[in-house]
Length: 201
Image 1 (cartoon, one colour):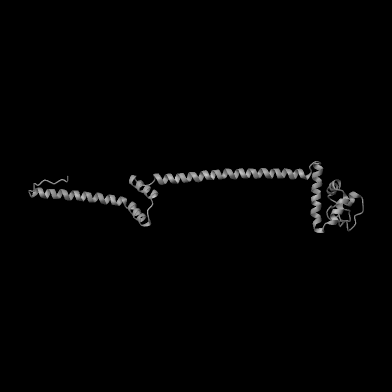
Image 2: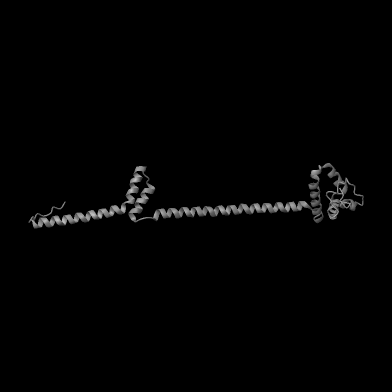
């Protein structure tokens, strides 16, 4: 329909005809956008546009006119390829971006794999060389490569945890035994017992 000022739409003004209230062009080619209809008419022709709009449902006409206007504008800019050239360019850019994304994901997976491998080696090296003295390391290796059942594992853990205490207790017992032996020898000497000590063969 024509505007409220009764000025003809851009199509009717270009075609030099009176714009009727039921004009099919009026809702989509307002008087302030004359170049829009000029481009569409130059590429497709006014009669073809009228036929197309009459065959479409009113809810689809606006999208159809916008598509025709874009295609006409691209055709005038590039008479050889038109909007197909733009579509081809965008498709090429999309494929290039997909390739770049695939390469980036591949590189990222390599770095992640190297990171996991380095972490595994670091943890393995720490397990092999870490913790306690030589005896502790030997027990650690033995536990790691020769697993036992649950009861034996508990016993070995208790032994490992109390290894320092057991060593101290053993030293105390040896010292006490030597002291008792010395006291016994002194007592025998005072009693005049000159029997030689029997050494085991």
